[in-house]
Length: 332
Image (cartoon, rainbow, N blue to C red):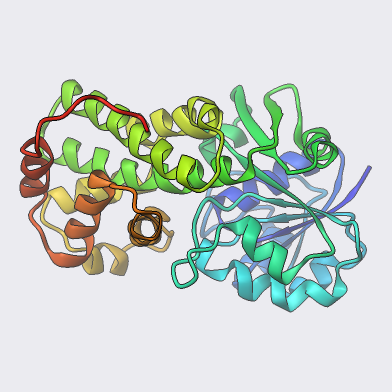
């Protein structure tokens, strides 16, 4: 039995906390909203982010992140990407050397273009870091549906330790050592999910979606290679696995955003009516900036940015992608 702290009580953080508590681990989850922490302790439910799903009786919630991490040998980081640095800074001095930290956030910090692993290297260098990613809708993991993910760490033993912590009969965890590839794939697939939602909202069919998935995979792989990732990572669970899930699954928040954009809503209008974060918005901006930094062409990311931030009509974005200069199919 381990003492585990989960930082972030969104749908994914709450689901992982529930999964670990059901394994018999001692789990404390920190919620940014005090009312969420109070509701979890009082009613065994997260009414804002996981309504209607009863949580394990052993799961305790805290409104102070320092109280959550006190005595923990494992910390699961699950805030949205824009909040990770500030949250970790609040608890850094209370985290002993050698603590296992598992990042479950799929995103890129927009102002620094840092992956989550880079944020932790700067803010929590005394920890042992792993990234957890793969095709995993929170609701289906909560239901115990068979799910496979990957835990990646630069040091193999750290990945093995993360694997041991999370693995259950219904939650299969593979290990890997390509942290950059796993994190980049997990972030940029959300941009593709927005594009997939746009296609659906425009009433387009299976052919364009298959083309989108394939060509998105090509540009994510090109950027990954430029950043030192292993190209085979993008053929795995964190790459094509998560890409297929979020572009085809009805539970994808990013895909839902794309549908709304195709229907005429602006990003600001959509945000005003939705509490949950669509990570693809920040990832689109960060992905475009990384493409410029590494001199990698990312036409799909560029068109999603144009729709999100410049008011381009979604149908015009599709037309521009189809009208690009003809060329060989390339992955490098």
